[in-house]
Length: 92
Image (cartoon, rainbow, N blue to C red):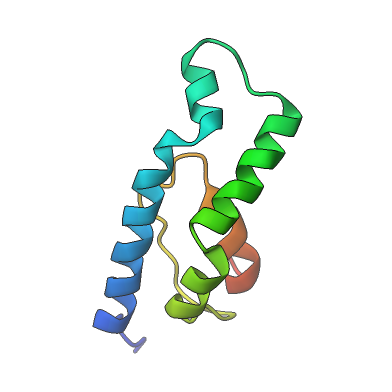
C-alpha cells in the first residue's frame, strides 16, 4: 500500500500555494489586464524576475522534490511552478 503524505509534504505545499497566489501581481499579468499582450522579451524578463523573487530553487529544495515525488500545484494559474516541477518529478 502506498505511503500517505504527511505534514512534511503538506506544509511546503501550503507555502508553495501562498507564493503562487502572490505572484498574480507580476508585470505580465498587469499588461494582459490592460488589453495589451506582453511581448516575448517582457515575458522572459518577468520569468527571470519571478525566479529570483520566489526563490524557486530554494522552494524546490524545501519540498525535497525528487523523481517519483507526488506533486499537486493547486491554483496553478499559468503553471509557473508546474512546468518547473514536472521534469524533476518525472512521470506526470
